[in-house]
Length: 187
Image (cartoon, rainbow, N blue to C red; front, top):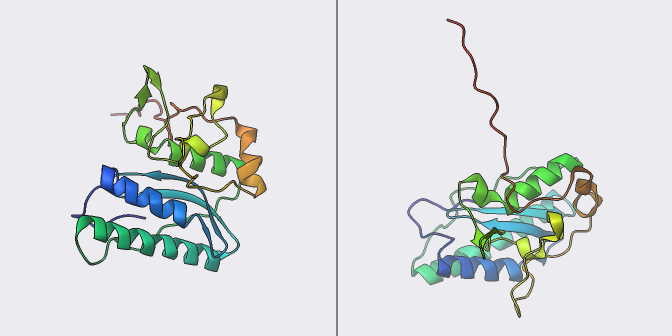
């Protein structure tokens, strides 16, 4: 879900606080279940389960309306907040699910951001990383005390066990395609 141009940043303190609150309130409604997310500067990445297309649409629409109203109030403005409709993709295989989880939870790394705590790599603090059970080497960020989980546990096989076939995710694993060897051209 992408913001319109010219609006505030979601990763700012007020923007992130509003989005986090809205995700927590709308994490399970209309047959829609929010499993993982990350808040980026001008967009949100979500992984969700839904009973069907209509449940997905209603759940996303509910989240979008909730976030838009609260952001408009926080930013002292009126009008459209999101640029267009959301973009979705049905994940059908364990590899696709693992790639999507890595992409969503480590999206900041994809864009060159680095998160470090006590001199060690750590997960993006503006994501559902503390509630994600699949970090490698037992590295699991601690959920903030007294903060209700903004996500619900997955139920479907692909999100609970299937993706594990391809290994746990490292907090320093950069998602997306890996650069290959340089192309050589014949002259």
